[in-house]
Image (cartoon, rainbow, N blue to C red):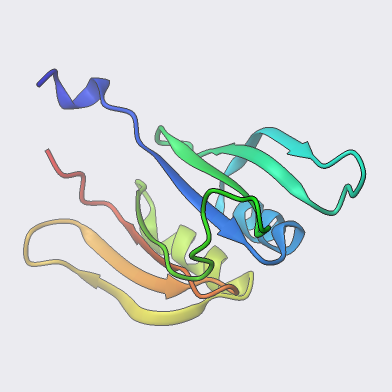
Length: 130
């Protein structure tokens, strides 16, 4: 396998209310790369790509019968950041529920977890697996 720095991971999710989650993702720190909407119904996100500042990102769309991802609320993601406390607080301020408070981890780094408004599990931490 090649060097870990060359690996790119894009987590894929489906949302019941894509516009509400777009607001939440922006508050947490994701930035829009591309968002494509259904021409007949612009409330439906067909495909979106949002970037995480540390690299990689997520792809998502509105939950729909012809969608590839149907497990709304069943995803989990770990986001590496230099300031996990600030990202954690932004997530909570934007409507997330605290699952695990921020703590220093025995294996290194600091981290905590929340549940977003649609039931997905997000962990924010400074530990970068190598």
